[in-house]
Length: 496
Image (tube, rainbow, N blue to C red; front, side):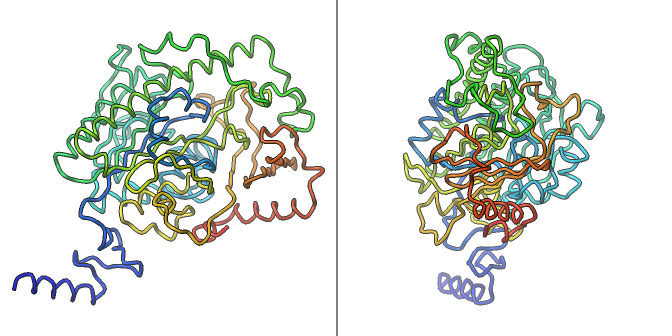
């Protein structure tokens, strides 16, 4: 009799447009801010490892990441919408392009944490959505540039943004030593001892968070956000002398012999000299050393998931906020360009329903991370999102149509003197540009009138700028696409 009464009550709720949990449902059957009726009671966990400036050429030196590729799916055409830390991370958190978050740089008045906050973005992150639906959420490591500035005093340094159950964050952890860690509103100083190394500290906190979440029997989202391998690419003590014979990959674009066809900002760069090439090789070794602690972090977190019986219920996502060039096109060291070295970065996902060892060639961008996490948690991503959920691709579900382009935007040189992303003289910082990357093309429009067009089928290393020779009709199509992307929002972005 009791079962019959429960069934009648549940049926009445469903007929009234609500689920048995009393939450209003949309047409797709998903509760607004809740989970689907058909989803198991145990929501999947999400472990998100977000690195800083990690390029694809470092993955070969990360054995746990390589194993993650074998266990899950690698997105071979994943691109960031801006190759600078704060704009990219703002897009990751909100699912919106920089022109819609308002975060176009690392520093006010065009970007940074203050702009992210003042524009109301903090209320619209994946953390807020998941916490409101019953998830424990934690961020450990780096948040957004400018979150913790030395000029700020008092409570502003201990502020915890909405959406985070636990918060272990510092804004000045680039050296991985000598930083103040804000742990849920309490500052703890870490100095120069081996045990103060930031990746070691947050790894221990991440393991503890997983253990406590398991004991609480509550689903979690854990974002491990490292400063590594961002310059100065400080290695953990045990890695400082490793990889002594490594040198930067000598791709066809390395120290490009002829750049006469490149845009004006790059055309005058001299060929790299022996001393500069040695510096590039040293920087590559430092970067490889720096990511070893990240790789061990991943291994230890995966071991913890297995030990707690959570491995089969957890999506593990490995990602970077932007790429990095080292010697390509005569650029000594940096990011910010529209070339594949900087815009094309790792996205690797393993978890429930994800085919092991799969490669997904369809286009994805960092605007897709937020709606994907919401979808995996059983939520309906908001219509305001510029990106779309990658969950159907992860689960191998049929998709009627999918984008075949990626959009990249960049605000030209407007850096503060103390900005950690300030490029060196030979690092390369182009003027403002807007670009589209297709399966076989890269097209870039600079605000000064310069243009680039590369046929990636014939020229995958982006050596020959073929803009003068490209068919006028194709150039017109790509220019029109750029103009559509520049002002798009929500569904209009998703349908381009």
